[in-house]
Length: 163
Image (cartoon, rainbow, N blue to C red; front, side, top):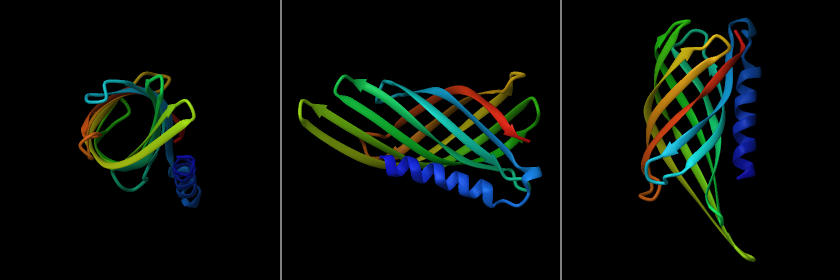
């Protein structure tokens, strides 16, 4: 799972620094809470997104953590593309398409087992200017293994790092 987190961070960082139009970059980062309809547990996450300067697209991802049971730890990562249907200073509305990876680790005494599943995210979201940042809400459906196929709802705040 560490490799996945490092790969996600390095990929986003490399893409941002490879862009030669630093003036036009719009990078936002934040955090939030999510809830899965099937897993029925809270997920705490951090995210970062990069708004492409000449296209109505934003790319990025998030990494989350949940502890559904005393013996279970769950990490998930999402690489997403947002199509910005509406993008104004006050409000943004967007669609979500992306890749979802969930890593679950079960530990009982000295015995540890883990499982990793992948899926596809499809959904929509919106942001509202709060003055200090942008509050966001998202609803997406994760299509993947039967165990992980579910609706996921998220709320949080993102702040612009660059404009």
